[in-house]
Length: 354
Image 1: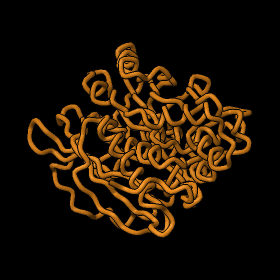
Image 2: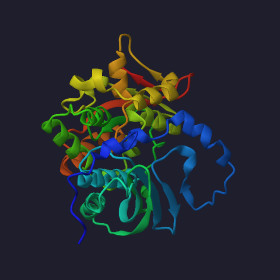
Image 3: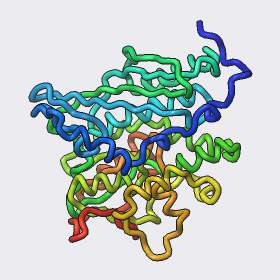
């Protein structure tokens, strides 16, 4: 049996320079880093690769099965070790659901500062990850561990899907309706938590949101009227919406007042807008059109990095009722219609707020 957590263990968030999906490299920098990989061999069985910035890779095994593979890991977004493990694992598995697939197994990625954290605290992180995988009905079948200067945890997550039911972020069609499955604000709330300014109720809401597995994904992919699917994570709603727009050759129009937001977020915006949100805007803001008078604080929420965020669905208008029913059946009471898709204009694919 592992040691219990030590009372001398420091807060997890004090051991890292960032947390959650806010650790992601900004999309503009990432694009530059990946330029040298453009010449890689792409077999015809690879249905989805890196070219479209999708949520996972998809490899066709046969006419009935495709393998979905993804990985995600980050530094602590919360101080409780068990909660950190749950959030990180839930976030990693989300990319499988976002392709319309069902997860089948995971591998753990563990990098821990052994000189700073007790074995008990590290064990609780792993137990939290295992709890999330148990909730998804999959085993952690192996993994890799290293001694690190900062605590990092995540998963390689694998799933399967029928090749015809793969849903890409680039599937949106003009006239589609956009539905978002979870409220925004995890980056803001995580910043407040790190500074001791998040209430118990705020923490409970953040935890409930970030540990909710995006299980509607496969049921949504089974609907003929669902054309595009992604999850909103480190690049914020604007960034992942823009990836959908670019991949689809469309422009997404978002009704900002309809976008769900976690309860305490707007009260904390002025003090805890994140540097990652600013970096996101600098990377892609030229392709996002804001309404006149839109404040810098609201823009920070639009680009706020979401950890284990919600599914963004692009569906035919006649499928909206079914999409909303699926979200409700899976317990996503805050799912909301937030906009629509249209053909891109002369300026190219964009995200337009109204």
